[in-house]
Image 1 (tube, one colour):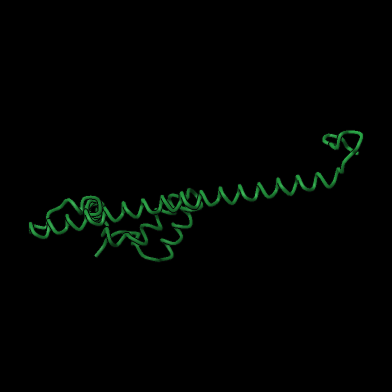
Image 2: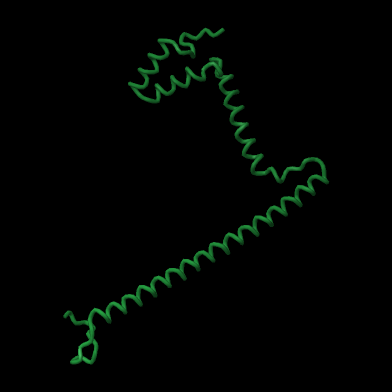
Amino acid sequence: MSTAIIKPQWSPITIGLMVLGFIVFWPLGLAMLAYILWGEKFGGSAEKAQAYWNQGKSWCTSAKTHHRHGAMRSSGNAAFDDYRAEQLKRLEEERRRLDEEIEAFHEYMENLRKAKDREEFDRFMQDRRGNRQGYYGEDPNNGGSNWGQNG
């Protein structure tokens, strides 16, 4: 049984305090909302709040440690540890082979793009040269060349 004046529940008093907190200074309203939602877990005592915090903190750090150093821990069985090390080595070699194939594919695609760009550019230049010769025509007084003349 809690003897707190304001209990962590949805009541007119707590809702009013939360709204007032948001009006005055938004972090106060947010703190009141957190108290309403999670106040029961803390039980109203600093010791329970600290225990809850430490429990969450230890869970987060153990999850990070497990993912980061999971391959380094021993299972207690030497044969299994050897098997796991062999499989991890095989997977790493497969990953390296796949990375090399990806790199080779990207290089191939880049070469294809360059070849296509070169082909399009050559086609453009050939069309442009063909259009220029037909557009300007030949002038017998200028030796057949009209480069740089506007008409």
